[in-house]
Image 1 (cartoon, helix red, strand yellow):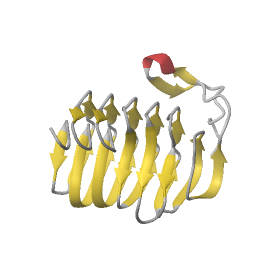
Image 2 (cartoon, rainbow, N blue to C red):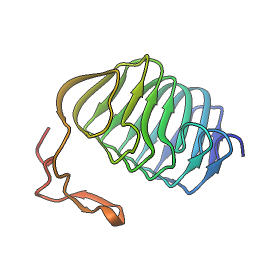
Image 3 (tube, rainbow, N blue to C red):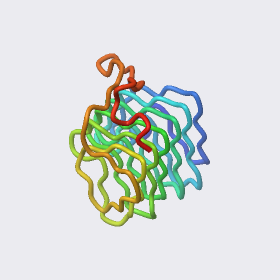
Image 4 (spheres, rainbow, N blue to C red):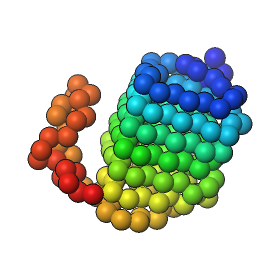
Amino acid sequence: INSGGGLYSTGNLYINNSVIGYNSSGGKGGGFDANFLKNVEIKNSIIIGNESVYWGSSSGFYADYVQVYNSIIDSNDGGAFYTFGSFSLVNSLIINNEGGIESYSKDSYIVNSIMTGNSEYDIKSSNAGFHISNSYLDGNLSATHFDDNLITSGDLGFVDADNQNYKLTPDSILVDAG
C-alpha cells in the first residue's frame, strides 16, 4: 500500500473511540493518510505501532484543520503527525515515536498535552507557529511560541509506562500543574 496502511481518506475524516494499530505503508501515513480534506477530527482514540517508508508513520494530512482530543499516539516508527494544515492537540499524549508533530502551514495549538520519548523531535516546522500551553514537552522544539506553563523536565509519574498505562500517579509533576 502506497499511502494509508490502515485507512486512506479523501473526504472529511472523523475518528472516535478507535484503535488504529500495527499497519504499514510503502509510502506515507502508515496508520492513515488523509488527503485534500477540510477537517480531520480524532477523539478518544489510540494510534499505535504503525510504520511507513516516508513521513507520517501514524498519519499524514493534507487537511485545512486537524484536531486531536483525548488520544494517545504511541510507538509509531516515524513521525506521529505530518500536516500541512492547522493542528490542535488537546488533552493528548504523543509518546515513544520516531518523531512528534511535523507541520508546514498555519498556526497550531498544543494544550494540556504531553509529548515525550520521541527520538528525533517533538515539534518540527519551518513555517508554522505553535502556541503551547499547560503542556509537557521534553524533546527538540523548533518554530514554537510558548504561551503559558510549559514543563520540559521532571518525573511524569505514569502508573506503568512499560505496559502503556499512562495514567498519572498523584506524585506526577503534572498533577495540578495547569
